[in-house]
Length: 475
Image 1 (cartoon, rainbow, N blue to C red):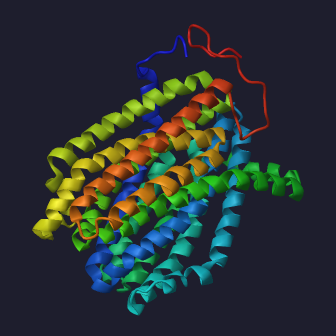
Image 2 (cartoon, rainbow, N blue to C red; image 1 turned 90 degrees about the horizontal axis):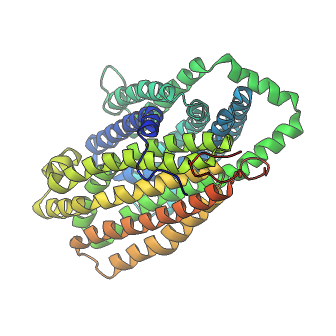
Image 3 (cartoon, rainbow, N blue to C red; image 1 turned 120 degrees about the vertical axis):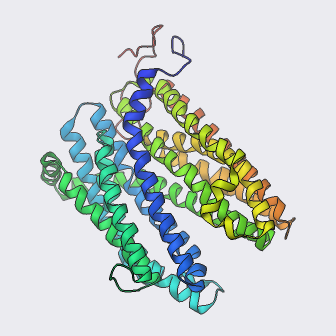
């Protein structure tokens, strides 16, 4: 890439921050709501504490699958916006909402099967009953989240990222208040325990849905009319193509969440001390990486705009700008994780833990920053590949690296060192290593896609000419 700057362009860094920062704040708000929910269930009773882990992870794995499919809407909208096609962006957003409504209906129809999942385990009957209650509500709020994802994708794809941030923060505030109220019976609300947690999340995401509907421009609704004018067969074919592109993205999202869940259960093989320490460190890791998801989404919007406008030569500079922002964030997180781990871990339950659990958690905290660094590259790389429409590559890479290499390696490590809590540190180091490998594979594929001028979301077009000596794309 001759003639391209090595250092990040300050103007592009500002552009990345402008688009991504609202998304990062929105993800941070979602993290707060999630942590409040987990803490509330943990403190309500021993039964809800036992049931909350399996129920939440199972529910989120299923929800990530359907929201990941609906999330492909962002790439379609971003490309249309990059081409300067406002009507096209509205039509792509409308198609995404139609797909999301179908996915939401399908998810609701699976409720009788999903609530039976806890019965497949050997956990106590009291715990599985609570898990089933939560999963029933997970299906309901997951259906609403699926539609919200499509609506948010329209705003994000058109760079109006402050709208999802504002809508999300209002909904998250409702969720926090209702969670405390409905779990414990505070603020004059009924005490519902586990059921209250699910209802609170449902009320939060429903508030967000109302917010999105209020903020949608009239041009968006006109997109439905233009789609309907094409006839049922045309719309069905369009949604079929969208589903084929979105399904691998949803599968990758579900497998990512399932991977985190697997590490939690595998850590239990190292003994109760390792399991307790790992649970604390896992919460700390979420604090570190969840804002990076917003950064990756913001970068994918900008690269989607560039792909839609056939300005592929702009993408490497956007990636450098994004990584500059991400590395700055991770360096701050790494400083606290390495030098002040006890201070960070205390809010997540370390203050009341025994000495062995504290030592194991502190040791793991001093290496978990490595996962944040690796996740920065894998998250940004995967999101950018989705903006090209390379969702199948993202899915296959995740299956190959995580499920054929990373998880088996970690499982073998745990099985050969049962009861040795000191190896929880090595578990995180291995997990980070393979996450970094996945990021490397993603970036190599991005380089090929840029060089060839690829776009897998629309019909094949003549490839753009390579950048000239001045780094400017020739069309």
